[in-house]
Image: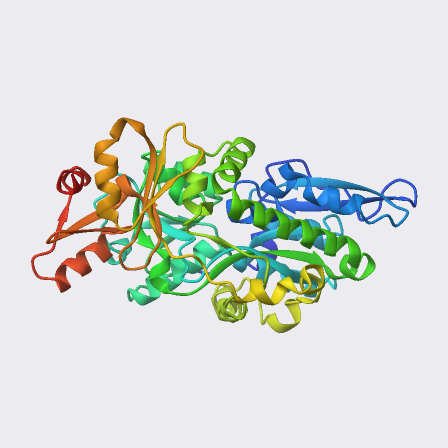
Length: 447
């Protein structure tokens, strides 16, 4: 299956909100409007979007500049990164946030139009690729990637989720262009297609897989972390804006770092705040953004992420969405380094916290962590009417998932959770005596 050039891909994802109308400057010369494009429901961008906006940190940083200007922030919410890129290259958005594959299209489109952009920081990331998941309908008989051959699979072409689908199929020996019927759809459209039966599977980015699983509308088929390739979301800025107003960009990055620290220090409150702003269940937001969530948050541009970005170029080239992309020119960490000063080196060296089993009791402002999934299950079994959500890390990849949506394996006294059935079966095959059990059976054994 061949895809049309990047222009078509950009036009496909029309914004769900009002069209951008801001500019770097508005009104008289003393008034500066900074236009920020973000994706409220792509919740790994919250430190540069939804959460940052609700906390007001950027406005506070701008007010502290005292440079003779009055600043106004125009926040514009979009469903995907593509319309943000379109508005940036039109000079109507100054700063935007999006996933790694859209960032590359952002770079390519900016260069193509003579409106270059730069990657200036990172929001949320997962070093194994766990932010993307392939799901099927709850009653689907599809149980492995191999079962997707000849099936209709919905994804958003040019997104990281599409990249996960292409790479996963390649590893399974399936040509992503000829082996499946790929449906190029916005996430919400794909979710509806899955529910209606017009799509057999859906490959999407955060928070769609977790949301559909939580709602009982989907079950996981493939955990993106099995690829063991980093995936992330980041902040991009127009080069001309960055050069014209470096102090404004630095103010944004300082504010982003503050929002990151808030999220890490107050994960439950942050999840509740994002849930209120987006309409997503807080339990789903916490799955990804919580204390031991699938995403880690840090504005530093880590070498592993830059390396992954370079590997992503070939996937987009094969889909004819971009040509070559000079990643080294696109990545520009000078602004975040200046914004964070001596803190930058420490943030760059930070490693993601280890996954843990975690329960969120009803009415509680804090969660409770457990050393093993079995200990969590014992707690859940004893408090079944008092649990808001329970999370466990995949025994193979570490990807966190809902305990009641996981595939459970009993191996003697051990209880092991898996996001996808194929990895659970692989474990059982390699460990004599191990067997797949239901969630109810796992709860009973743990109690």
